[in-house]
Length: 383
Image (cartoon, rainbow, N blue to C red; front, side, top):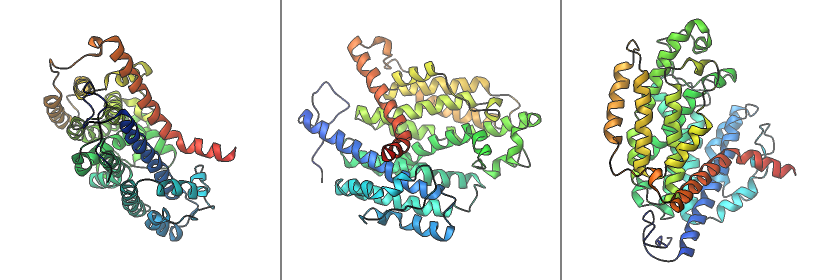
């Protein structure tokens, strides 16, 4: 059991407890190290799942047993053809680092790997037919990540136990991000022969999901898009509740910035035919503003309020999902109404503003680095 997390000074309300700065840095480092190992382990698991050259007879048992490989010092897989194969070939290095983690971190990572492996095996040949299938698939590939991270935050005592215990909220954090990616990446996934939009939804608008890319189907394509965005917005109340519980500033930035970027992305995608012609991205300046502002829960509420208002203004009166969209936006509005207690970054002292900008930038840089970790890992191995 790790000792209580201390606070370096009373001027840092995002921390809890009492003690020395060195202890704070120790906890922060140990947790961030566990998160990095967690990512590499899941990248290895995902590489097995993605490798279409591995037969199902071989792949299914590997996915089911993958969590046990963490305790087999010599286990490695050298027959993968995937671009990220280095994480499998050098898995003994990763598993060694894993076994050097505190037992409480090992238990979390092992449990998530076991559950994710079972889920991946289930969806090897299963398609996303219903909205329930979509939720289940997103749970396996993203919700479990949110649950695992939350348990790591609590295990490190950077956050209260409830953060890791409330798996429903942690799951919603992952589902909101994954659904946003699935919605935004329609065309890219089509070009790569993958389909994640649920048949239950798109079949009401077209005979084939690929038909949405045809210009003559633009109107019904956008209607389907709007329905899926409305579905994703139902996770926002859980996101706000989750973020309101966080006390550590670094953890808050790590969690809040992607969620704020996701709501901005959904606002850009809503009722937008460009989703079926290319990738819709938010502007760099817009992204920087979101990163600078998303440093406390009230500011995040203001960001969310801004973007749901943007969606509301674009709701077509003839859209089949318009009533449902208006209803969920009304709910989100109630939870994120601007308050007089919100501190705009324009009112921060120059020193605080500089620190907030640095924290946000580092957090976003860390998230970007996480997404590229496997490529860098491969390059390091080749050199």
